[in-house]
Structure formats: structure tokens, C-alpha cells
Image 1 (cartoon, rainbow, N blue to C red):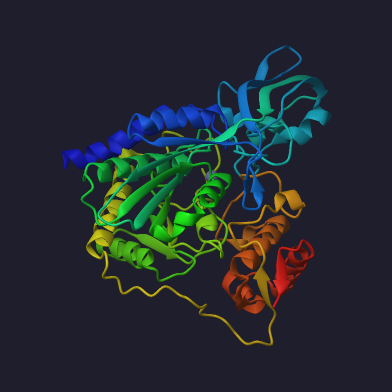
Image 2: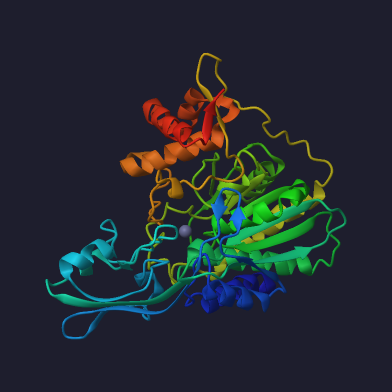
Length: 460
Ligand code: ZN
């Protein structure tokens, strides 16, 4: 019992160490993060140079930042990066300028729905600079001159990631993946890092006696998983099961998002463990937005990788804001998550070589051949839609992920593009995709036309 409690405490301690670091998809923040993780488990780190082509994407220039602020006309800092790294639009290009309020306003990001907190926003692939602040503070800005500084660099460098591998009796692998790119937020991102680290320690201590081999990934979200999948393409066959772990430290009920195949052994296993636990939980079908399961389950990769969370991303008000802090998570909740995952591992180990799970090889909803069926021509991970100017450029907005009624038109369009790409595998008609996604057929048709025009899709 004491030991069990300790696992939660150990994870919380690691999160506390990682919390202040300003991370992004590249840069010294991720290196420092990997260095701290490597004190817990001896991960191997990799540096992949900027401009390396990874499937449809290119690794961007490396971003680093040392300082940022906005000073009012009296020289008082009204926003200071040193108080919270969320105050800077992540990946901001450097700037030093004096501006009017009118000139400054388009560069300030707020969340009017949660007016007292600072939102987390990113602009990785569209060069921009900006600040994030509570909406209420924004409304109080006076019409005066402001001195703006962002002391950042965007230069050739590399993308960093870490990996920890434990060999088992067979070469068949189970992977656990987390993302290391979020700055100071605890539940989203850091809790996943802590849980993957703790599971790595647990597996390491089993001293190669497991049936499966285990791989633990510490990668930047999206570009990191695309990079890893692209570099390890030849070995993907070995991966039998996997989970993306994030948002595992809050008090919310457990949520399991199934693999794209559904009814895979990992799906059955997690569902059985949650049922046996008698703890409240929610099981949701795969959808093509979310975390790195988007890439692991893209139609050309299609691995049996689900996503395990407590409150799922986008579903808690603290999500992607400064309120996702050290008070929002608790060692006990981290520990409960660890215990569930340990049971998942034990069950997979016991079932090794005896699974009767039958993942869908064909879709359940394929209708009739009078409907339009498309084929995704870029099925290995998501194609980079931002560079084709058909996708939003400022990231971090994903709110109310399961409640489409609250989506803006832009979000619906982005969603439609991803649904079409994910299920245009030759088996699903556009009507099937409309039924699954609950997105209006006309919006999907429009998205399909755009993708066809960009040569990412063809009618079959
Ligand atoms: Zn996030």
C-alpha cells in the first residue's frame, strides 16, 4: 500500500521538476525535459536535423526563447514570460518594437470563454509572434504605447526525442507514448510523461521476464510521432499494441478512446480492466482529432494504438490554459492511473499468444457502391494541411472535442478534412463518414473537393 502511494508521489515530483520549463516541439526545453527524465530511466535521445523530410512533413527550424514581455508607457511589465511561459505564443518569432494598442491587439490571444486564465496557443508552421493573456486583463488595456520584446531564435537545429526499450522474451512490442512539447501545463502532457516514465521503471524492474518487449516514447506531439513513425517504418510490424498516455492526473473519470480498428486486443483489454475496476469510466470510438493516436492510427499506418486519459483533452475547462497547473492534479489520481495501466500490462502479458480479439478489417458501416468512395493519397500519418493553406494555423484551440454544437465553422471544416483523410481507405463512402462523424454531408463533400484539388484524395 505504501509503495502504491509512492508511485503517485514519485510521478508528482517529476511533474513538479518539469513544470517550469518552457517546452515546444523543438529546442532546449525538450532537451532539458529529456535530461530530467533520463535521471529516472536511462532513455536514449535522438536529434533529427531541421529540414529532414518525414512523410509529408518537414522538421521545422529549432525554436528557443530566453525572455519576453510587454511594457506599458510607464515601463511596467504588464506581461512577463518569466511569470509564465504560456504568456508567449509558442514558436513566436523575435520582435522588439514600440506599438500602439491597435497594432498590438492582433498579436494578443485570449480565451473569452475562460476570461481569468491565460490560454496556451501555438504557431509552429506559420511565422507569427504573439502574447497570451487573460481576457479580462486584455479588456483593461489602455490606449497607449507599448514596448514589446520577444527574445527568441528560429534557426536550423534539430528535433529532440527520447526512447526507452526493454527487451522481453519475444520481439513483439507494446508501446507507450507521451508528448514532451507542452510548456507549463500539468494534466495535458506532463502527467503522461510521468506515467510513461513510471511504467518504464516498472517494466525495467521485471528484468526482461516479460513476454512482450516494451518501447516507451517521449516525443513532441504530431511532428514527433510523424518523425518517429517515418524513421521506424520498417519495424512497425513488431508493434502489437500501444497506448498514448495523457491527462492522467486530474480527478476526472477514466476515458478510453479506442483504436481506429476498434475491437483490437488493446481495446478489449483496457475495457475489461476498467470494467473490473468498478471505477466510473467512459469508452469512446476513435475519432481523427486528438493526440498522437491520429498518426499511429492513420490509414497507412493503422496500428492498434488507443488513447488512455482521465478527463479527455478538450473536455475539462482547465485544458490548454494556465489553470492546468500543479494544483489541478494529485498524486492519488496519478497513482490510480498507474494501477490501471499495470493491470492492462498484466492482462496483455497473460494473454500473449492466446488473443481471440478480431479487429475490424473492414468497416462496419460500408454502405452501397452508388455512394462516393475516396482514397487518401497521403495515408502515412496526416498530410501537412497547414502548408497547403487549408487548415488553421494557430494551434491550441481544441475545445469541447466531443460537442460539435459548440464548434466554430473553422473547426468543423478542419474536422471534416481529418475525417475524410482518416476514413478514405477505399472501404468507407462519404455517407459512411458522415454517419460516423455526425458532420453534415455537404460539409464533407466540400472538404473532399478541397482535398481532391490538393491531390491528397482521389475518387475510386
Ligand atoms: Zn495539448
